[in-house]
Amino acid sequence: MDIQATSGQNILPNQWDAELYDNKHSFVSQLATDLVELLAPKNGEFILDFGCGTGYLTHNIAISGAEVVGIDNAPTMIEQARKNYPNLKFEVTDGTNLHFIEQFDAIFSNAVLHWIKEPEKVIANIWRALKPGGRFVAEFGGKGNVKVITTAIYNAMKFAGYSVDLNPWYFPSISEYSSLLEQQGLQLVFASLVERPTPLDDGQGMHNWLKMFGNSFLAAVPVDEQTKILADIENQLRPKLYRNGTWFADYRRIRVMAIK
Ligand code: BEZ
Image (cartoon, rainbow, N blue to C red; front, side, top):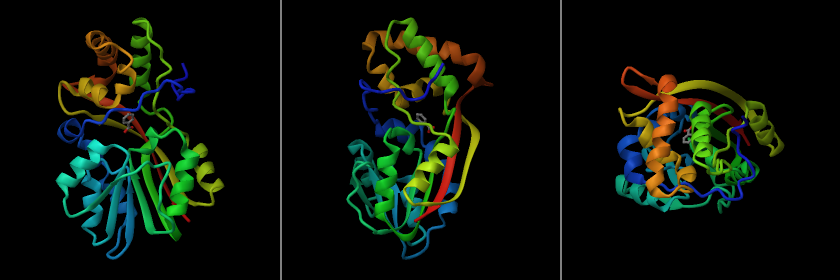
């Protein structure tokens, strides 16, 4: 089954619960501290954190002495980021419509580009926002990411009689994404794709993950039926992704670095 993004006419945007994110999914940012090392921010640089969520990595970058702006298109996340880090700059901004021109020494992005199905627009915006010589460092879901989870969602939705044309995610191959970067005039330094089975928070980890990140699918289902569908998904996944009391997400991360 092709679980890549389809035409997506009816896809609802994910609803972002900043509290659930900070309480149960902070691993998304914590696992990416080595991405900040790859970025190697320096004192005095201007850096954009593209899709900053609740600001954890923006703060990590700012510790270097760089001046950082965090952007996210979810007002709930930006509100929480401002509460978490009142001394940093955050803006609600759509990543396909950036207003920055040749302003940044570097643009950083963790776990967000797979939410935007218009990669050409994003890359064009990133290119425009970078100074000549500026670097783009990003990690997000690559080809095959959460394939086991998505297949179970599709099965459960189909079985309950709902459309599966609701996939909100973009998971490209390395070659596809590298070509897009190069077509825009960014010079690829490297690209990698790695399996990263990721432990979820607790015995409720898969349920919470599905509520947090899968709500584009669930939004199509009346609330009283959601519990049944969630249970069906968990039952399909338990033999594959539940080990010794811990749920795992079958993440596959693409990592890229490119220079303008
Ligand atoms: C990810 O980080 O790979 C991811 C998160 C939510 C939904 C899909 C993928």
